[in-house]
Image (cartoon, rainbow, N blue to C red; front, side, top):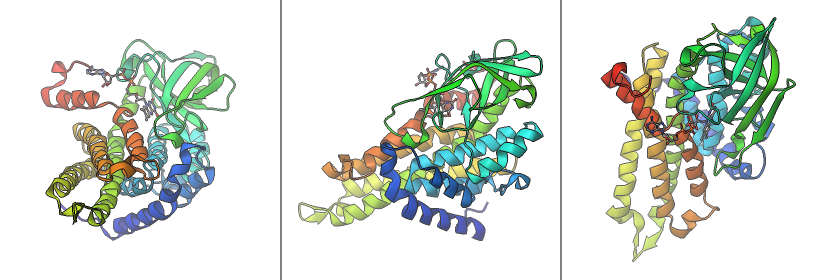
Length: 381
Ligand SMILES: Cc1cc2nc3c(=O)[nH]c(=O)nc-3n(C[C@H](O)[C@H](O)[C@H](O)COP(=O)(O)OP(=O)(O)OC[C@H]3O[C@@H](n4cnc5c(N)ncnc54)[C@H](O)[C@@H]3O)c2cc1C
């Protein structure tokens, strides 16, 4: 076991940390009121962040999952939400791996450069946790697929150029689901954006498909394997989410450590009170343990080894520990922590979104239990 990043990984850590603190952090507050600037998405492309999981022949760098985790953790020190671009580009790269060559040639280089954003549309108004019961449909009409239905709570619904849509093409349950790639400028596609407590730059919303016609070669992979594709993408991304959450919490703790060294009450710096310092020590320890678990998941993914249970563990723990740590930082800053001049309220709202997104705590525990007890004891399959 080697717990040290190699030279290349340390360089990536330094570069992304500097970019996060000098470029992203000062602007993070802006995206509450305005859409995220496309030039920053392009910058992420130029930095190589968006092409990390894109194959080299399509303009990416084929970086390891561990490297992606390092980038997510450091970028989230500047702005948690920027990790959505990293997450969705890697998910799209993973899913489009099974796409027709024409789709790959057109979309993968654009994802890597930041010219195109591709969304992942599984959730519907009627199904979230039990996504295998989705109803959005695709039916064959000659050489085309006709897609109908609504997808809800989709990250980048407001800004994506294309979308992997999980559609029912066969019978009930997971085996009747296929992936269809839908360019979002086609006739019959419409969108709405939601108002949310955080994560504004991800422009989450609904996508509506009304008799949207796409050529048959827009089906990704084999018909009926869509649900497996979704679950495989979830597994590595759960560790990425955890590390982004940990990055934001670690930044908050660093700032709070500095603040409590200078803020005095009753004639002493807050840092000298064990009631204060022990709180921070607990959060440091819990975040550190979750961080190691997250990198273990990514190392397992890089080695091609199973990691479903561990991924669910860190997806449960990462956002939870992060929210609790940021909340403590907010309180330790007193009334200023509750104000919007400091970043804690916004960070809390941002990270909380991914306690739900990509699977809730209950669903993570159901996965851990299913893997421990066996599928025959699972309350869901
Ligand atoms: C910030 C954010 C980003 C998102 N991005 C995307 C995206 O890009 N693409 C996409 O497809 N979806 C996305 N989602 C949707 C997300 O995946 C769903 O919200 C999530 O899977 C939960 O589904 P639901 O909201 O319908 O809740 P429900 O499934 O209705 O669950 C409601 C509550 O009941 C609990 N619950 C459900 N079933 C059980 C059970 N069997 N036992 C115990 N408790 C249970 C849940 O844990 C939850 O607390 C996003 C959501 C958020 C908040």
